[in-house]
Amino acid sequence: MRTLVVACLTTLADPRGACDTTPKVESADVPLYPPLSLRAPSGGTVEVATPVVLAPMAGITNPAYRQLCLEQGAGLYVCEMITSRGIVERNPKTFDMLAFAPGETVRSVQLYGVDPEVLARGTRIVCEELGVHHIDLNLGCPVPKVTRKGGGGVLPWKTDRLAAILRATVAAADAYGVPVTIKTRIGIDADHETFLDAGRIAQDAGVAAIALHARTVQEAYAGHAHWDRIAELVEAVDIPVLGNGDIWEASDATDMIAQTGAAGVVVGRGCLGRPWLFADLARAFAGLDPRPYPTLGEVAAMLRRHAELLAGLHGERWGLIDLRKHMAWYFKGFPVGGEVRRGLSTVSSFAELDDLLGRLDPEATLPADELGKPRGRQGTPRAHVTLPYGWLDSREVGDADLSDAESDVSGG
Image 1 (tube, rainbow, N blue to C red):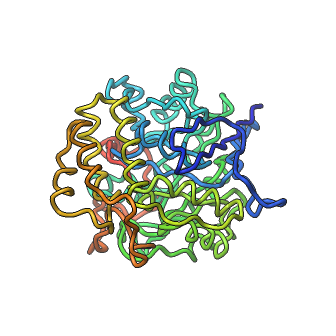
Image 2: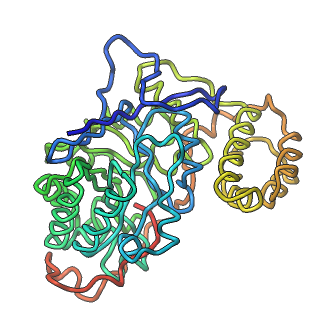
């Protein structure tokens, strides 16, 4: 049996601090929130001192971004979604994505797949060859090119395939003492909910915890998350439930737990351009008063650190090109100016970046009305969810080949 403790915290003023497994967060005498314990059937445990998980996001949560968030606050930082078939077929691009930052003492991977045996084989490979400590399964992706083939967030409708996938993956991971969690949604739409069945099946299969994005596949990322459904799941199962959806500020996380009884939270879009959110979450979960929102100068310093980490991963030019998509998120709401914004959107060298950041007013503050606003993709609910023909006719899929539903698209 092994127990790994995840706890690391630096401060916004010291973004280069080292990470180790010793808790560093000042706290009250009695912790307000217990740690999140993810336990494999054989007893192997990953214990997350601050019950916060970074959601995998395609093109975002690479080793550089995970390291940046890790330097801010304690939590579990999950790698971008990896397709299990790509692992089994030894796809070089897939293995390039299975890189870890120096500070990642706990290696966490989200896998995606639709075939139990392929998922089990992929699980054995990452546990045996890469020393992964935690595996999450993506069962919430709402992307039409995935759902139209029966994958992602619509797969839990087929309870036989869901159970087979979970049993096979848990068994493969448990041979290494590695806990398995899943992330799913409320259901396909309001008339075809799956989350309660998924929770019970997961519990029976030995899954360590279930994360619920409290929206349906049809809702995608639109509207408000239904936190009451998280509370329903908490009541229905005995394993830890993690809540996901509409966590824009640290206070949203503590409110979610107070309202739902969840064991922790999963943070996705809320941390886009705001890696210091994990420092805010660490303070909130430790019962400490919130800090002021960072000034524009502090935001610029954080972005500069992000650039360095990306350059270490991809080289200067490609690292800074990758950084471009983060610019609007970092400076959302700040008085940056059109010329500087345009320059930041095309930056490709540190010289350009430093020149543009030097033009900012370091003392500028974020307007109060910008706090708590959604970040990243939103959109509107879909008119309908694209499904395979006859998908809703039965809750079983049998031995049908769903391999066309496998994709490198991440989301949940």
